[in-house]
Image (cartoon, rainbow, N blue to C red):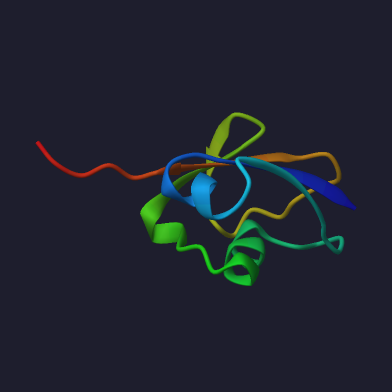
Length: 73
């Protein structure tokens, strides 16, 4: 199945800001992030515009957005 990944911040420079990935059915967000070497703890994860955690199972056509957590004051 295919998912779309939209990345913001520094990771967009390392990867492509938008890419399509082929994943197996039943794959979780966390599995995709680990495969790409991306830390879930350092990003807000949205699937189809809803905030989720890395245990979310993906479905064909899902759009996963990764927004960096910003620290400071």
